[in-house]
Amino acid sequence: MDIHTGYAEVEGTRLYYEMAGSGFPLVLIHGFGADRRVWDYLFETFAQQYNVVRYDSRGFGKSALPSGEVYAHPKDLKGLLDHLHITQAHIVGQSMGGEIGIEFALAYPASTRSLVVVDPALGGYVWSQAYNESYYAVGAKTAESGFKSAIELLMAHPMHVPLGEHPEAADKLRLMLANYSAWHMANADTWQRPVPAAIEQLASIHTPTLVVIGERDVPDFHAIAEIVAERIPHAQKKVIIGSGHVVPLEAPQALGELVLKFLDTVT
Image (cartoon, rainbow, N blue to C red):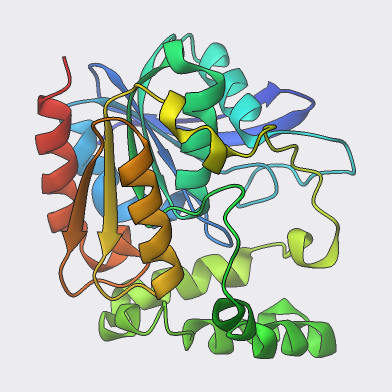
């Protein structure tokens, strides 16, 4: 597969991207702590039918770190698309990438041909006490001896337990976490969120939308998936049986089939 790689100087930052295939543009957005490689199992699959762009969000992978300036991931993505002369694209995001995708669809509806969110996070959602407490050990270990020392605790988190049943895929995430700068763990993030929060604006999204959730993901992500599917008009919701939170690594074939079937319905 012929892959074009490059850096885009946009919005005061430097974003690394990879692009392959031809046809209508499709953008892949990764989750928190990961990078573009979370899509390794699907990049070529999608590139057989689409012009696929995957990139590292600001502060992740090979992209530049924030430096205290106010920024917005959706605005960064719009800058990347402008740099690539892409006026409209299918937007596919996992976890934090789903959150970015939702905010992109809100800010740039004309640029969003369709929206696919996989185990998405959501701006304005209030995380449960149980979810917050599940990260206490990770936070404590990070504060004590750095993020890399807490990677195995994070890999043992309930949302990642199903991933552990796929050793090669688990090692991919482990490597991404080891490469993560942990900037957001040590600094106050200046990501400027929409006002009102995205959770309050979902009904205004009229883009064709698919919500995908791993059956074995933790309750908060199931709650978010339900909220997004209920509030975005005509959104579809699909559950991938047996998968946890990192569906692109755990169940790439099932996810790929769902996404391609959905995109076939988008005219």
